[in-house]
Length: 310
Image 1: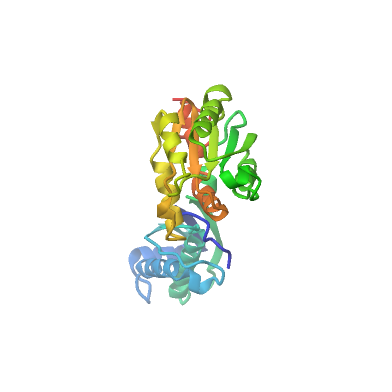
Image 2: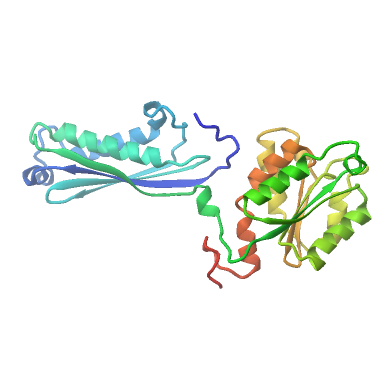
């Protein structure tokens, strides 16, 4: 089973369709209420709902999902019954298998209830019509490459007493997300140097995104949040809230981070923890949602392609 522990929960929806071919007289019997086993439609609907909830017990590699809504609709045509099922859940993984399994179960139930009056029936196909809520739905493509800088604040690393892992991890992730990393720098936990570097990144270099690591704890040399108060012009409280919430689900220490996020001009500055594990988890929480922020800054609409202006 795939590891989805790094993913974040979103509203997932999927719609699937199953087609059962049948003789015209069979469809007429359903409409007249003359099927010997009773009305097959409500029974097939219950089967679809039950199948959606039990998919992980049927399909071995499916994760258990707390299904929150199942909608089932039937379209009785001249020679076919088309079953359409929509499934919704707030979860880390999609619900397309739940929708496909539900549509299949509905078609099989219809087949079972109608087989005594129609030996010509055939399940012609089961297909996925739509799925939404996955990572790809939250990606924004812009007409220029975004530029980023990475700032590591650490007395020990800047003195050469320890190797930097967190900053390099940030650089790798930014490049994987399509950013051009214009600067990667290690400085001591000095408030004035932190302020000067961040201001230069925003005012002179005009980076789109600046990610810092270190200096967010309780040590007397943890000065990043205090430096940020002077640097940022507008705070973005939702970002550190999301990072801490994501981290708290994985370690009880995430709540101890004092990291901030905010805007200086059109530059977004986000403080990440100093530990490599904390950085990795924070990056998982940050992307891909942060990508939408640049379109907001530039006056784009909410469309994922990032090209329509307000």
